[in-house]
Image 1 (cartoon, one colour):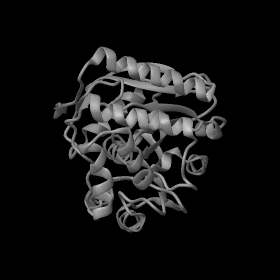
Image 2 (cartoon, helix red, strand yellow):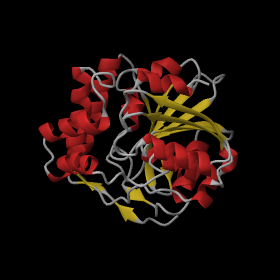
Image 3 (cartoon, one colour):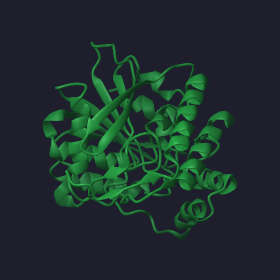
Image 4 (cartoon, one colour):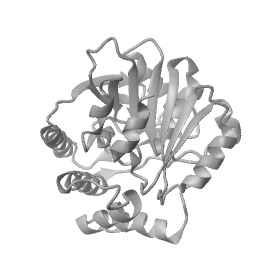
Length: 297
């Protein structure tokens, strides 16, 4: 596997310490501990967090996060407790993102992210697994299903960023570029309020909003991002996905409007089992408890 680009922290020692402290804070808020696994892959070290890893009677669920986020965002509001009786949950920190994993990435247009995901999964099981991805993570899920189809049982896509190009509406561009150009707490909060969440229905408590704001400010100011961005997969690519797909979208997704996502999924996927539209829900759908419970099928 060839490395296409490498992203990195400006001060690895102190920046990784910030992440460790952030994880510890989340564990305190959620009154739980995440088991940490360091997996050696073609992209370097990949960090995976797990819940219920010792419950060998349960099937596996591997979670892949969105761009510039941590897989632990899925449990910011303790939402994963809803599916702990259903899965052994493994939260993968994607390489090339501002996480504890190494910063190497493959060419996003190849299937290499899929082969990388298979390398991670094979460290834990030789059998089939369910995979779930939000936004950019959805693209990685489909790459996996194409590259190594024998590893994938079913796929859950939450506001995936792989069926259409990033919205070029002025509103979307403004709120997404604002924290990148001026990465302050105020501008990150405005981005989250207007583009990621849909208050008051889709929102987090004050403590957990502070967690996500702190992480985003950190990612924008401490991480040199050289990774390629998600793209709209072609019809021919989507036709190669054989696994069952469950699509869960938010009615108020500003980044990837749900109507076009559904249209492209219905046209391109041969085994689209279910489409769920959640009202009053923004792009950050993986933080919503109502979305997580949909993984329990």
